[in-house]
Structures are given as structure tokens and as C-alpha cells.
Length: 190
Image (cartoon, helix red, strand yellow):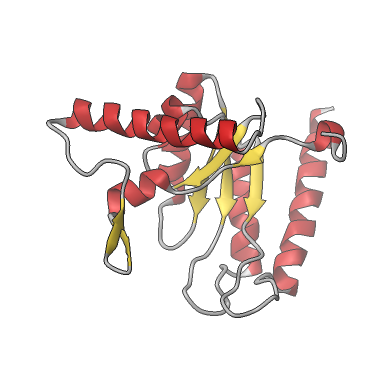
């Protein structure tokens, strides 16, 4: 807060717990899931929320992060991410995931919990160019904005075996064009 003041919105604490639960994500033959067994759907939901809440509580206490809002990005189980303690969920715009379905699920969960939501534009490909094209990224940002996203982020930095970012000039042009779109939209409202 001392450095960023009112521009510090919160902490990004982990991602894709819901998607990982659904996909049974595996690395080196180890499955990463919060809930491995449940008696029924209600039991699974309760265990998921309790386990994720424990992770977030541990994060808050042991990392001494205070009461800042916690952000996550996900592509499934948004409602349960909120129940566990996240303040903001970002619907991932990635791969071949349906933008309308993810927006509806994330926005609906946020609305029922009186929370904020947004979109995270992230990888679509395993190899370069990783992200969708600049024009497609622009359309994703407009879609999120028109549907009421409070936050729109681009996952930019990570690229295997490199210190370079994954955004190309076309992506920076899309960001600039989106900024102009928002400005024009807001001017029309005044």
C-alpha cells in the first residue's frame, strides 16, 4: 500500500483450483485436486470449500498478507471459489473455452455473492504464439467489458525457457485500441 496506494487492488493468490478439480490435473503422476473422494455432490462441495478456505487462511496468516482482497483466475467452479474466500474471480479466456459460458458462470457467481469479477486472457496454445491474435484479444476484452467485467487482465510474462514476454506488437496495439474503445464509450455516457 505504501508504494501503490489506491492503485493496489489486492493479491493474486493461486489460480485454477476449480479447473484443476474438474480436470484432475496431473504432474509427474501426482494428481492435484482439493477433493479426491466424496459421498455425494453436497459433500464434495463442502469439502472443496473447506479445503480451499484452509489454503487461503494459511496463505493469509503465514505470508502475513493482511486483509487485502484476494484474486484468482479459474475456468470452473467460480461459485465455490467465492464461497471459500476469494473476493474476485477472473474468468479465464483461454484455449477453446466458451467465453459466453465462462462469463455467465463467473458473473452469476459474483452477482449472487455481491462480489466483483473480471476476465483473464491467457494462453490458447502450448507453443508460440501462446496468445490469440491481437484482434481476437481485442474482441475478448470488449466482450468482458460489455458484460460488466470490473477487471480485465492479460497473463503476459511466463514463457518456458525464456525471460521474454509472450505479447507481440499486435497485442500491445489491441490494448491501445481497447483503451480508446473504453474512453469513447465513457464519453458517450457523459
